[in-house]
Length: 178
Image (cartoon, rainbow, N blue to C red; front, side):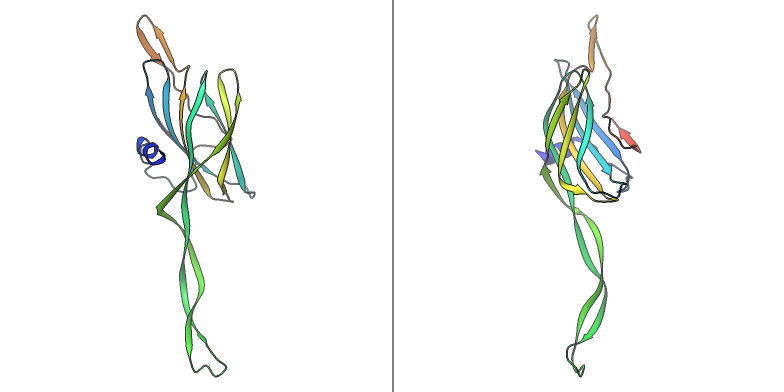
C-alpha cells in the first residue's frame, strides 16, 4: 500500500534534504469527502532527537487510512585508504580505511508503519505520530499520510464548491503543492 500511495503523489523536484515541504494529491468523491495522499518532509533543526511529530489536519471529520515513514538508508564508503604494517618489521602491509564518507542512499527506500494518537477539535484533528525512525539533528523525516476528510465541499444550487486546507505544524514550509 505504501508504494501505491507513493505513486499518487507527484515527485518532489528540486527539494534539498533540509527543506520542509508538503505534497498533496486530492480527490473529491460523490459524498463530499476528500481523499488525500500527503507526503510531508520535516527537517529537524534542533539539537535534540525528534521521535514524535504533531500535525493538525483540517476537516470536520478526519480518518487516517494509512500512514508510513519513508526511510532512506545511510551508507558508508571508504574515503581514503592507507597501508598499515602487519608486523614489527613492516615486511607485509594491508590496506585499511583511514576515514569513511557517509551518504544517504536514495535508491534504497524502506517504509515503516507509524503509530499515532488523535485529538479531535471542532474543525480539525491533531495527530501525534510516533516515528519508528527518529529524526536526528539536521536530518529529515518523510511521512506519507493517506486520509479522508469531510468539510471541504459545500453544495449550493446543485453546484459543488470546495475549500481545501493544508496541514498545520510547528515548522516553516519552503514548498507546498496541491
